[in-house]
Image 1 (cartoon, rainbow, N blue to C red):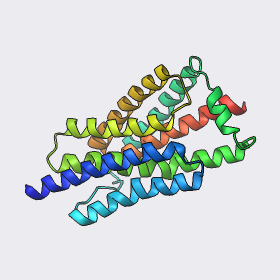
Image 2 (tube, one colour; image 1 turned 90 degrees about the horizontal axis):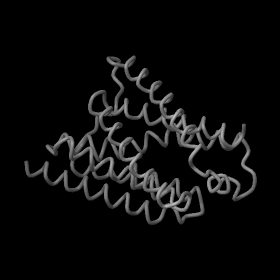
Image 3 (cartoon, helix red, strand yellow; image 1 turned 60 degrees about the vertical axis):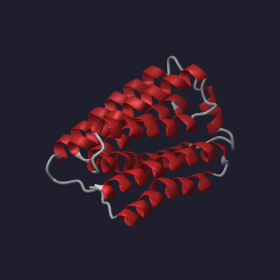
Length: 221
């Protein structure tokens, strides 16, 4: 019991510290390579070191059982998020994002797709490993009530993404986005709880691909 408490404390403290550092440093770092390295170190390496120190483990595999359900869930997530993104564009001014994309000159569709796929595939896995694996699955396995662990994970998830959007939208839209991301984080926790971390990753990847699809429509069509 004492070891579980210690591991829970380490997981919670690491989660808070990593997200605070990302929130403080991430938006103000102009170098994209430095941002990527920071994200890898804080969301990937820090949890691994904590797990090695405490001897914990995460269930990262995608068992054959339930594979079809996970794929259907991911397909449904893609359709829902694509529809929501295209609908939201009617009420949100996308000019700041367009200006950010063109900050260093016109961004070709090829570069847009490359960057989008890097975010959608390995980026989604890295975030799920941290937010749903480390900050939710590990805490729940160590005796933290699943609802509490899910609220903690979703809060960090929405904070991380919300701060990254700093300056893009008016305050009220950022506030709405924060709570939307919080609900999305809870849904990803539910997918992880019911169908494993792989299901949460597939849903997250589908959501990112949906935003990539919407981005192509918004900025290039």
